Length: 483
Image (tube, rainbow, N blue to C red):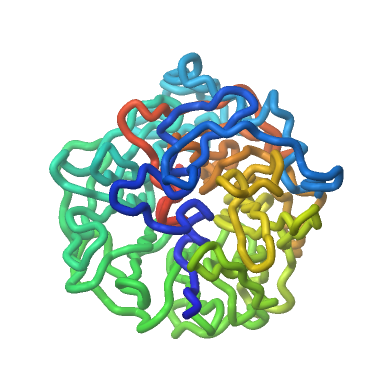
C-alpha cells in the first residue's frame, strides 16, 4: 500500500526508515556522531547496518551532476560543510557589524531592538544576543535554547523529563514546548519564561493524542496538531484549548497573529483570514502542503507535487515535491521557485526533489533543501548512501538560497548553493543570519541580504553535549527568538 510521506517534507530526506534493534545505522545520517571524515571520504551505512568510511568516486560520465543547482559548484573553501572548525570558532562571539539604524553593539545600552546591531535584541535596556530554540538529544530528547553566537545549549526541562518542539512567543520573553510523553498521547504543552528562572507552567495535555507541529510566534495563540491531523489552539497564558479544525497539519500564522494557513491531505492549502472559517487558497494544487508566511509580503510559500510523481525508497513511496509561492490574498497562478530535477547517467538517473523551505522575514529570499538521489528502474537511493554509485560526488542534501521578487513572488536569478549535507534552514528575524543543521550540529552564518553570500566565519555549536535532531523535518527546524 502506498505510504504518503508528509511529515517534515519527508523528514528532510534524512529519515527514510527506522533503525532496527541492534543496528548502528540505516543511512549515512545515523553516522553523524562519527565526526568529520577525512578529505575525499564520507561516512556511509553499509549492508550490515554499520557505519564505515567510503571513498568518494568521480561521476560515471562527464555530464553527471552538472546541473546548475546540483550542488557541485560549491566552493569547497567557503562551503559550511567543509570549513567548520569547531575547535577554533566555537565560543567566538560574532561581530554583528553596523547596519542602517542598527548601531548599538552587544552589551551597549538601548531603548529598542531597532537600535541594536544585527543578531541582537534590546533586553533589560541592553543589546543582547538573540536565542535559538531547537530539539536535541543527550540520550534523551530535549527542548533546548542557546544564544546564537555563544555555543552552550540549555534544556528547558529537567534532566529526568523529556521535552521537544520549543517555540518562542510574541515578544520573545516566553518559550513553549512539549514535555513528558513527547511522542505519545499524554504529553504536556508547557511554557517557560526567559531568562530561565521559574519552572515551566503546564497549559494543557494531549488528552489522548500526541501534541506535535506546534507553532506560536507571531500567533496570538499557540497552535498544534492533534496526532496526525486536526489543529487545536490555546492562549499562551493558559485557559481552555479550542479545536479549530477537524483535519489538517502544518499550521502557520500570518504576521498579524490572527490569520493562519495549513495543509489538508487531498485538499491543498487552507487559509483563515481575520478569524473567518478556513477556505481553500485558489490556485494551490490539491497536493500542496507546508505553507509558510513571511512577515512583509503577501506571498505564501508551499511545497506541492502537481505531477503526482513518486519514487520508492525501500518500502516508502515518496512524492517528488517542488517549491512554489502564491499570493495569500486571492490566490492565482503559483510561481515555481525550485523545480525537481533529473539528469541521465550511465545506468539510470540522478534526480532531486525539494524539502524544508523557509522564508527570509521580508520575503526577499527563500532557503530550501534539494535532496539528490539515484534512480535505477523504480528503486531510489539517496546520494551519499551505500549503493548510490551513480551519484558520484553529488551530496545527498544541498541547502540553497533563492532570491524572490517581493511583489510578484517569482524567482530572481539563479539559486545560490550554500551548504552541502545541511538541512532545516532558518533566517534570523532581522534577515542577516541563517541557521541550519549539519551533521547533528547547529551552524549559523551571517549572510549578505543583497547577494545571499556568506559573510565572516561560521558560528559552530559542537555536539559536546547535545546532538541536534532533524528526523521530524520542520518540527525540528531551529526557531529564532523575535527581536
